[in-house]
Length: 342
Ligand code: GAL
Image (cartoon, rainbow, N blue to C red; front, side, top):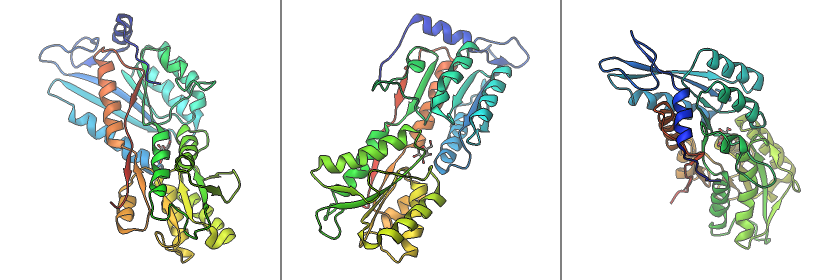
């Protein structure tokens, strides 16, 4: 997954893709004329502005670009809302290309459309930094050909297996290991994000794998089925309310693929008169500020820091590298961090 690709060709290809404009002067190839200001046009498309985590992420992209400005280098950052609509996002990318944007940072609506988008951007000789939604390879090869084969395309993200594993470990480390009623089973439900996303797939799989790896006996109250919440708070609430109505006290652990859905789950838990940490456990991912607060006061069992600062800064640093004609790796990884009351 972490194959690196450096080559002289790459530097040439990157330079060809850079066309920062110099006020009052000629367009440059990513350099800057003494005494002049070079302005780089950066195009960013986020899959959906309504997503809590991606809102933190995109605000930090913009803020961090501003900190990198100097007297002679400016970044003109345009951030657009993909509105969870791949056709809309494809239009946005096409507009970036027509506008001669110098680098594109892209949070895909649909990772299955990665190739189509990569082809367009590569053909236009614009460097492409993919973020947060990792396109996956086939046949168990997780590296993605569209990234490996294109030296001006890279992906910045966090390995979702790690976040799932941390969620499971938080439960395994509880004094009762998540088995509140002592029947030798951990009765859980899984509230899943968008099932097309590898984050949702891996968190669903690896949280449970961490429990079985610890020799525990997790049992999904819905059989093998995850309940699809598409990363949304309101869906987390409805799914949890239904599960509490159906399974009552049998439900011991609510795993949510993200914190937004865990916030919804909490509302349902509270409404049902259940108490997190006493008769039910609740897990999320992202470490949204309100959820870290809840972990501290015991109303959430644990979450996992999805480091939007580390990821957004890496994305921007890599975009700047591309603008400077420096070679890129194919993949850049940022670690998750376990968040518990301790
Ligand atoms: C995940 C994050 C979710 C949601 C999703 C969007 O990494 O945990 O909250 O933002 O990305 O793809």
